[in-house]
Amino acid sequence: MLNLLPLLHVQASVNELNAELAPHSAPNRRFSRANWALCVLSGLLLGSALANIIAPPADKALAEDEAPALGESHSAE
Image (cartoon, rainbow, N blue to C red; front, side):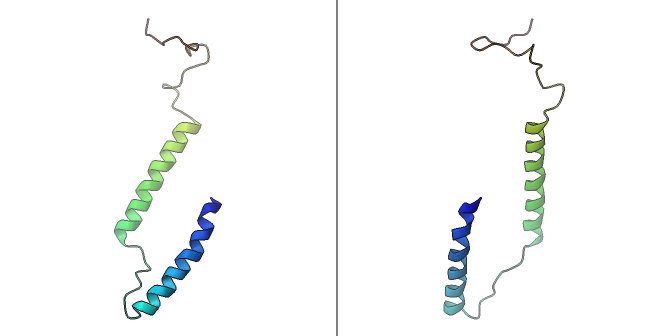
């Protein structure tokens, strides 16, 4: 997560350079409705994936006694 910290300095430098080279251009500092919709959908997908990892559905989870041993395949009997 801390890998993003150096990018803050880079982004500030790029913003300054852009302000010098194109002072009258629109800064585009807001999210559009499509950006917000994709953020919400991505968040729901990520939340669903994390919830499935943390607490898998009961009908899909194998109990420890049902789990196949190493090297054995799990076949329906």
